[in-house]
Image (cartoon, rainbow, N blue to C red; front, side, top):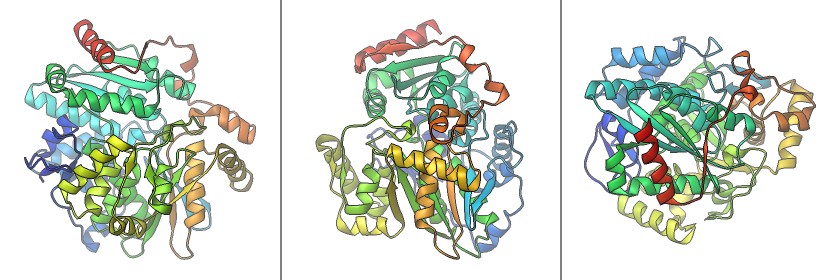
Length: 464
């Protein structure tokens, strides 16, 4: 399998190359040159496999030519060995035909663990094989940072610098990042929004001398390996509910568009997916796009679902590339204009293609609390704010005879204040995190300034 950029860089790379690179040199995102195809019998053969085995078989076409299957299977087995549920990503029926896909049974209680635990193993394998060392820089709206830190803490082959927007994550999310003591970890609280953090990371990649100096790499969902590692849990859920012999729909609370893109990628591989529903909070750029082709940036507003407090959804570029029939020149032109003007002019034909698969829903904070309250009252299901929005989107799009699966992206204990406000119940942290609020924090508070942040990363590398 070879990979090329959404913006026209024609140099083909293999999986190991794009794993370490993260972002393409031209600022685009890597995409596979073609989509691997599974026949109905091949999908059926995956039924009943342990999660790690299924994941290895689904991901294998993307790593072909770079990582052999035996190695990939070993890495998957190691990655998912310590999840708290034997199914890794269990399905829970909430009401007739509507299911919650629980993706929060990993070490940091969020869906990001599903990909990040495997990424940690993949990075260690490739870097050991090549005898190299890299610096990972990432932006987080709450969960990516802690998942990355947990996956890479103590590594001899890489250093990690995570940027989060100061005061715009939950206390649990922040402390999961800032209480890690390993010397290869740097936490930076940026005076700004998640979009500011994401822009800083992209600017560091665009700064070629800095990028080469510190051997920069990325684990945000701009890294294709993150998307590939998320495809298997959609496959597992669909097979459990009757695929490939019946279609399944999914609803996903969405910020940076990577999680729902993985479901869409599964459909490109031949998995019968009927429709995909996107759940948004008040930062509803994706829903506005689907409703009326309005992809225009507004100010990021804090909400009860901070992981979705995003206006620039990076992974949408990958979908746009496909909607434009892989016209990289048109994709680069539209993305450049978007960054310059804050408005994306998606051609009507491309918008129609998106709407044929995707629908959107957005909830205010009060509506989110109402959904959480109703879920607990009617189904005895305790949901965090993000999951509640996903379930609301699922309920809106549920069609008779088509199983509907909502992605449950975070454990309710990550957002206790919202859960208490909605239900009166204080969700306890699992035993392994019970002392989280007693641990000392360590992080730097920095302005939204590229040179200042780059200097902090350099200093961290010298002292680490």
